[in-house]
Every structure is written in C-alpha cells, then in structure tokens.
Length: 291
Image (cartoon, rainbow, N blue to C red; front, top):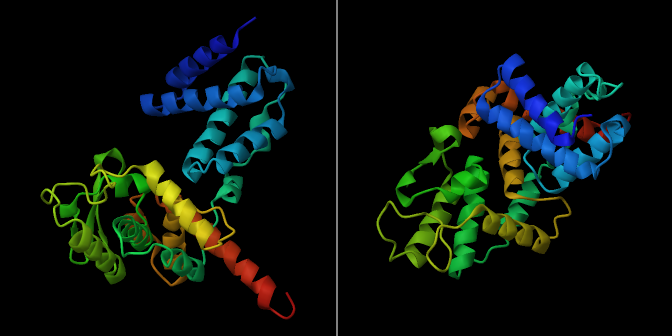
C-alpha cells in the first residue's frame, strides 16, 4: 500500500512526464496537495468527498489568498483526484463535481465607490505613518497594483502622471496614476521624507527607515477598514479588484485594464466582467419595481 508521500511523489512524476507542466507549476501543485492533505487530518483518500474540498477552499478564502491562487489550488486538487482514480486509489473522481468557473464565487468582495472614499478618509496625514498610509491607499486604488509591487517601489519609479511598476516575472509596466494619489505621495515625501537617500531608495518605508512589507500594509488596511466600519472583508487586494471593477463599470476597455493590472492572459482580467454582471443583477433586483 502506498503511503501519502508515495502518492504525492508519484503524482508529481505523473504531471511532470504526462502533463508537460513547468517546474514552477509542478512545485505549486505539490504544495497545494500537501496543504490540502494536511487539512484532512490523516483521513483516507477513499473517504474524502466534495465537502472536504469546499471546506479547504473556503479556508483559503478566509485567509485572504488571492483568487488566482485558490483557482490554481482547485485545479491541482482536480488533477490529483483524476490521478488517484486512474491509479485505482479511489473509486470516485471528485474532479467532475467541481467546475472551474464556479471559482468566481470565491472572488473577494468589491468596495463601492462610497466605501473606497470612506476608507481613504481614515489615515490622518499630519504625521509620518498617516501620510504614508494615505499615500499607499490612494496608490493601491489609483493603479490597481499588487501589494508586493507597492512594497518594491522606488522613489524614482513615480513621475508626473505615470508610475513604473515592477510586476511578476520581473516584468515592468507603465501605469497612469491620478492626481489625488500623486498629491498624497508628494505630501508624504515633502513633509516626512526630506532626508530620503536618493531617488533609488524605497518609496514607502517604516518609521525605522526600512522598506515596508506586505504584512504591515495588510494590517494597516484592516485597521482602517475596521475604523471606517466597513463590514466587508477588506484587504489590499480588495482595492485592486475594486479598481478594475470600477473602471469596467465606467466604460474602460478590458484590454486596457489587462495592461494596467499586468495580466498576461485576458481570461484573468475577464473575471471583472463576471463581478460587474453580478453587481448589475443585484442592482436590478434591488431597484426594479418588478424584478
């Protein structure tokens, strides 16, 4: 009888040889399966059903994993169960019970424009942390940047009306940035970063002069959302989703949004069409006299 580690090893050999996946994807799938197995608490594969999969995915959402990561995890679990069925380890192929498009149900909540305004009113720019946080929040919503991209920004990356964002895979993209975000950044730099060591120094730093990290930004966003009494589950990624959805709802072309977000595949950007349609349906039901 194969041990759990044997099944994982055999699975990675299978997807490497028969699926032709990249080493990066293979390693990501391996980590996904290990995490899923850990959630099962030594339960036998034959007794695992759809409920365990849903609970695991819901747990990832509660931990605020990116939707793309949750989607990849679902794909990994589906491929793994197809493999187990093929090898005779299970009698039921769970993969057929999960349609990948249903992953849209896991998209983080979108803030309304009013909620964004309320969130941006929370940082007080009369001291270092408040001015920095306001600049970060304005920048996140103005550009749709990932929080990791914000952490890696240099002072020289921001110029009049545009910003140079260093994205995934060491790819750089040029994104327009609005006047409000630029004003917040200028106020932060002029009032609290007058001793910044050159344009190549980090744009957003801690009180100790170190580049701010993604966890610190995540915590600050959480605190401001709580202060603003926004009931939704808000994270830095929520502002990225809100940025794209609001652009789409106001008539922006999907290809332009794709470029600004740094998505390689238009299908990734297309998620916002689903979100926008869902919001449209909700508005119709709320306001139409005969929905």
